[in-house]
Image (cartoon, rainbow, N blue to C red; front, side):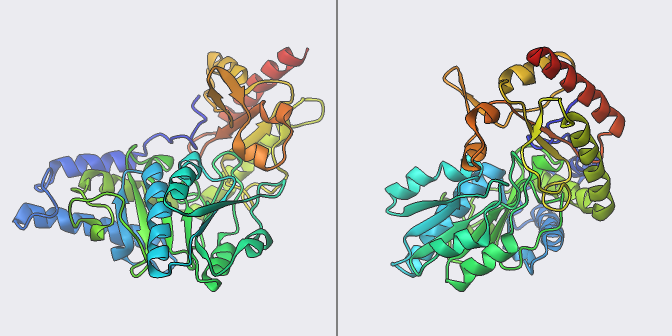
Length: 384
């Protein structure tokens, strides 16, 4: 049973159908930048995907603001470095970049490069519940801040960040604001009306791996990070992947269809799973006590098994037919605690035993009950 949707969700039928429809279209394989009929048809299809994505994202983003990319890592590198450089080019005193300490690695790992470019990088620390509160940002803001980057929903804990308030604070100080919405887009409504840029990732919502988009408002100072052509407003040059863009759009529309009902149903399944595996004397703790579906993504269950190690838990569960992930990484043969959990102040012996279970409406209550039985058996054996 696959329960690692936060890493990569199974493709949705709508995305597969969109790919097949593209293959049968007369413009399949045509360059959307060509002037001939097939090229113009491909360009129209691409523009239709932009319109749909802008509408689903909301926040007054326009179709022209949608820049197609290869996914989250490119989004984060392009937005964080490009927007920081753009802000400094407009105002030379803006040389500080504020990143949340719980960003995805592809966001945090740009920090050394930013420092090489002459920026000062500061990390915004979260609360014990994994939230970057507005007061923390307010204390760090100043007229020298170029960019603030805080993700919409954390990829390990599922905790939703107050990006509406954070983006307004950043804008009030003249800084640009970017949010990595890889985990939030398609799963919860997002208030991005004050965000300058938002990153969208296809394979988190059932589109093909290698698809994504960066919504960046026209007029926001931005420096491209690759060069060669004028495609995608010159921000992301290169011939566009029309097939991938159409599949991304189809998956996004399917994800947002009946979102309120799906969110409630998935959150109820997550709460049921929490109650079962984190009951008294199970030796399993919830990573946070925030409310599923309101303060956290509906389909992410994050727990800690003190004294255990994530790698062993994941492998034993895999042998029993359940595929989940650890919120920690194995480096140089030794398990290290997740930077997210460490930033939250979770003790190392607990953080080393972290597990992330993630799913959407396609996973049934029965499947989750079977997983709960397996996890409880594994933990019971380890703690006997």
